[in-house]
Image (cartoon, rainbow, N blue to C red; front, side, top):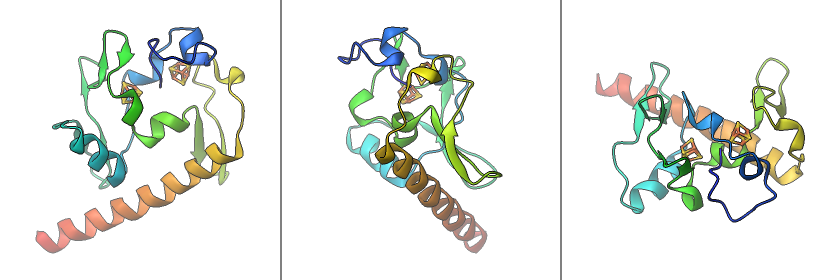
Length: 139
Ligand code: SF4
Ligand code: SF4
């Protein structure tokens, strides 16, 4: 989830000028992602799904932050954008590469990123649960 304007020329996303995962994205956002983006002045970039998860909004099929073939919020992008293509597989209860990413073989598995994925999943679930409870109480 990185645009071609990145300074890291050796990064697989940059090397291939790929933005594939910024299209049709349903990435769920952590509260801290939302706060960070809002503090930078961004608004109206989320949509709520029926399970209580807040997800990145898309416009014309791509993430609202994809602009000119690059991520316009790269330094403050959501956590899930930082860790992709590593994802959590619930049934296997493990973190592994999403082979949908055309260049996943070029990414290295770094323990810090694996921990970050697990932390995001844990936070995401708790925050979605809290939102659902709050909605029920409010309703
Ligand atoms: S699909 Fe993979 S290579 Fe392409 S931008 Fe996303 S993470 Fe990078
Ligand atoms: S925030 Fe940036 S990296 Fe993440 S999906 Fe949107 S454009 Fe891609």
